[in-house]
Length: 153
Ligand code: FES
Image (cartoon, rainbow, N blue to C red; front, top):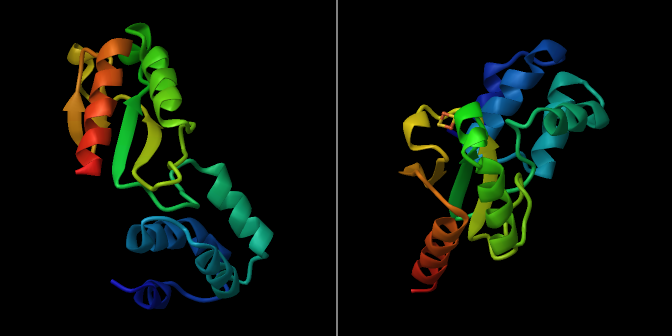
């Protein structure tokens, strides 16, 4: 679907469509490009600052493209108890970015998520939807190293 078709789905001058409209634009583009934020503002007749405000308030929205590999770190309770914060900090250090960011070379993005339903193997992360459980600081370092070297091939 093109973004043009998304705009056609929603009535103009109606602020109540803002969130579903942004969700659909992100679905099509993978993130919310700046020009689309402006287009959404025009479509809804809301100030650009208000559209930005909503896009930055909700962490379901991304203002930057995702990297080739999306690393999701579970921050649910079971994972937290088993040290998911250490796993997250290790990933952030290894990749030189914070959760919600993408590496400059566009290879990795990190996101935090709530329970992903695999508590029995906590702490858990997914990389490109593949589950990796029972992680330790050492094993997550190894895992990222293997993705980095695979990406160079
Ligand atoms: S809390 Fe992490 S998978 Fe359930």
